[in-house]
Length: 315
View 1: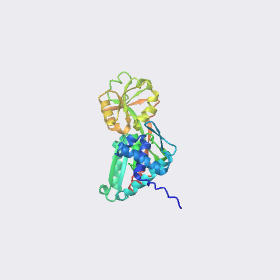
View 2: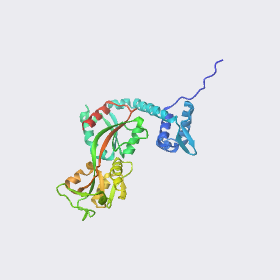
View 3: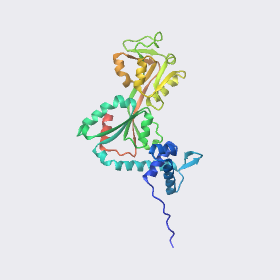
View 4: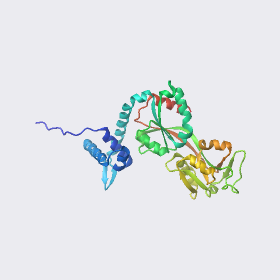
C-alpha cells in the first residue's frame, strides 16, 4: 500500500511578502506595521512558510529573530517572485505608461523636474499618456523603497547602502559638488577671513571652520554622508548645532545668520548668483560626489522605464 503524501499548504505570495518584510525589518511587529496585518497573522504566515519549506528561516532568541543561514537564499528567490508578481499585476498599466520614480531630496527638488519635462516631450501622447508616481525622501529611505519593489527607478545622492546588494542594481550617473556657504555679510566671518568679491567667496582652513556653527542634513541623507566622510572627519571638534531634514530650511537659517551650511551647489545657485549667500572654500577639502541610478533586479523594465533611463543618461 502506497504511503499517503503529506498534504502541505502551498506557498502563497502573502507568506513570501511577510518573510521578506521580517527579513528586512528584523521583527514581526515592524513587519505587521509595514504590511498592515495583525502580528498574529504575520507570525502565522511565517510559520506556514517554514512548514511548507520544511526549514527554519529565523532563529528565535527571546523576542528577537536572527537570520538563519537558510534565510538569505530564500530571501533572494522571494524577492524575485514578488517582483514578477508585481510586474504581472501592473503589466497593462506599465504598457500604458506608468512609472514609479524615487529621488533623494536635492535631486527630486532641483534636478528631476526638467528631466520629467523631457520625458513628457518624448512620449507620443505627452503628459496625457503617462502616469508618474513620485517619492522624494533621503537616500536611505528611497533605497529601502527600491528594495521593497515600490519604486521602478531611483536617483540618489551618495553611495546607496541597501540591506542586500545582490538584489539591487546601481549605476553611476553624474557628479555633483557640495558647498559650504554663509550669509553675504555673516557675523561669523567678520575678522576671520577676507571676502573675495571677484569669486564671491571666503577662504578658511578646517581649523577655522571647526570654530563656527554648522547646520547640516540629517543622518541617512546622501548629503550628510559626504559631509561626514569628506568634511567632518577632518574636524573632530566641529560645532554641528543642527541636523535638519530639509535643505530649504538650512538655506533659510543660514540666511538668518544662525550659522554656516553645507549643501549641493544646485540648492544655492540662485542665491549665489544674487550674492545673498556666499561660498566658503575650505583649504584641502574636496566635496565632490557621485549621483547614482538604483533599481531592483526583479523589477519589470517597461518601455517608459527605458525611455526615462535614456533621458537620464543623455543629461
